[in-house]
Image (tube, rainbow, N blue to C red; front, side, top):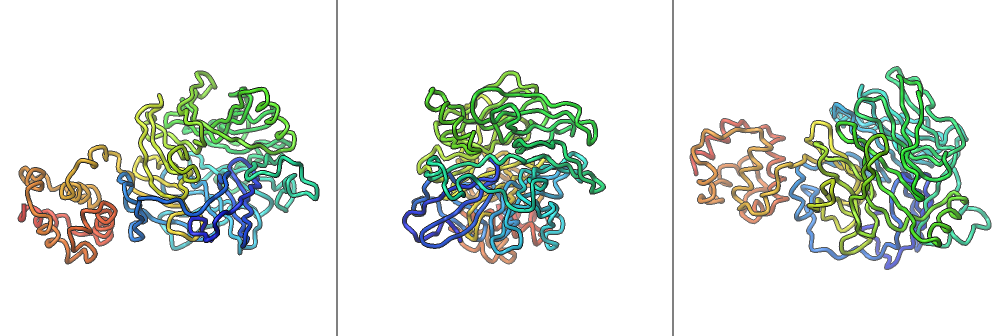
Length: 482
């Protein structure tokens, strides 16, 4: 069932979240679907109106010029929080299949070099699991699990026979105690890094593999903590944040010297009282979240966004200068798109234009790929991977012809620099001539309209790449006609 195309006028969504990065959703009226790992804390209305057209061939919406060669890696159910290995050859993600044998989210590994092999279950199938992340050796990893507390899915206070009045709301987050961080080493042996009755989740590993930042209630609030490791042994755990409210979803910068995270900090006395009343019930309701950064030791905490809505799932840009995140601050607030912003809060850029939900973005360590979760293309919430176009700042002003040539160079890995003044010539040449040179290989790129539209151009170049068009032939053809 796709929320984006639900015919029901109003769907009341009551969240029952296993952790702040894992969610169980009951959808009522008239059908029921079980979903997890989502951050849907709103009343979802009819599909949001949008001027952004979707192109199924490319899996792109209009205006998504920084993305190309999009691949859907999962299909069906609810899949979320996918994170690359350091070598970019594998991903870990958490998934929930309403028709499967596991009633809680489990952790899966997908080999990007052998997608036909399909996902491999790597958690033990017990309890609720969430928030996986690789170590730099590309084989060891962590995730959080309630497995020690039992094989069943943990139940929220809101699922009892007499739920408290605070449950009568369109959204809640459950803070299940007993979530502990489990490390699986390169030999497959498991080690509990935390072993207590608190909430310990939302963990991420530092680039050197010696630290883990995570969220825990061990201090009486939802704060960020830093765990120092010596191999699989915990050296010490120190508290990084202590402001009243929720701090979580943290990740290290590429150099490991900074941390980016999301936060909800209640301000008024009433908000603070309500926050702790809910926390005592192991639930919370973060109405607003903003993006923050700090040094890896917890110093120099700075607020990056100030939108007053839900900005979350941040991740550092590969050079550490910017942050990509998901937010509903724009337009219809039931719509979450990906945005890029400088660390100082300037130069906000919208990356995706989906009239539904895009979230959990992460860049590959080689700076070439972006992975994210989306409900685009229907059929549940799935993991998508795209080529990242880092130099797209001037694509808005490029002519369709020059834009197409830029794509040819980028994605066919061809260097046609021997064509004298080729860019100026391309500006003056006829796009139809270029298409005529290529159309024997690109049957879907036979009209000016198709190629002038950037998602269609992405599709054409994706075909070029798949067919491995010889660069020599491509360049000769271009040079001959410009």
